[in-house]
Length: 525
Image (cartoon, rainbow, N blue to C red):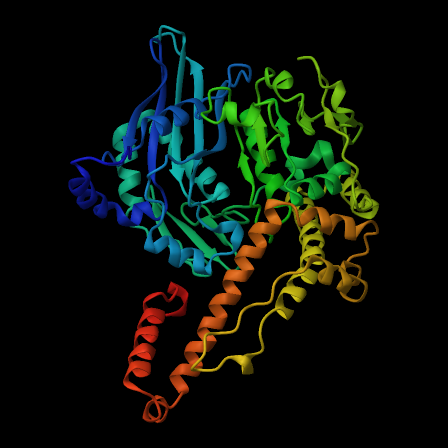
């Protein structure tokens, strides 16, 4: 049974169309509160016509509050990602247009929602439990971590004072915003000010009124801050993420958990991370059994958790990062050590990287020394992050360029595309043929890192990240062939060709042309 079927569909569709601009940014806004009888409960969903399934509501409720072990007092911000219910119409025309132009790391999610949370917990003697506990949650398909984090910082404090009228006013303003367009500057009205969103390869924003606050981008995190306790292990994490290995981050708070997971999946940019990831995951999650079963190998997922209970649950996982509060060793952040997975046993387990993984490439000691020297010299965190991001980008590009070059060689020559024949096929990807190109055109041409690059490629071929990359590139090349075929057809002398053909052949050609035009991808129009 489809959970979205119902007699109200037509009315809801008409009503929802009035929120068309809003829905290009957000699915909805939820207010989650703590009820003494029900526990976490959704107090409000806005716009009110948005229909969430009971499963989605339950997930949002549990994921919008910090775990009881976190002890978060005051205001806390974090994010989560949840699977949409089966039957939800995931595709929208504006999303397809947006994804056509957006880099892979900024594209919308087809089957998951992102939740951006602002949680407040303060003492309140007027409440029976003695505490005011409430979360304001933005639900979106867009991975705009930075932008929505800043949006909540501006909106949430006002909301907790004025409640629903404030929320309705902000949602009405968002409904006036133009759709997000990578590469263009947008001026977005917000609570008496203007959020200026401008972009090149990515979007970035600044609040120009009353005082300019410049953010580096809508989605990038402070990598250096996220990785301070594990800087010496960055090469290992880059390989683990590249290979789509199962990885658990055990953190002291949902903020650290979500930021660390999001930072991890970003370190292989511009390659898209094609595995599952959950920035904040709880025992109440609907996928808890699926992810923690011991009857099969752990899935390809990066999980962020805060509950110490997970230490026993994930003892069979190959890679677990246990983080504590960042401690300093003199001027430098204390670096956690790599430990055997068998050491991960008790709730008092010390911070560390619990894995038996051996890296294929050697550490970049120059980078580590440069970053540690920057700490001693009080170099700003954003500068440290820029150094880190540039290094990781160059490393990923060195790995991907040989694959891109080989893939391009599989494309048929343009002169082989003729008007009256089906376009030629892209040649199949041969791992051994690719390996034979590495001596002459391998990553050693652009990277100084030594190690077993060949072994790294062989393991990468078995990962979801390779499958996702290959499918995307193959689709792009197929569309290019179709486009070339249409160009050749449009320049062909159809009338001359028809003089020598029978009526059946002419009709067959017309039908094929019609079928081709109907099935054209959006980005060929």
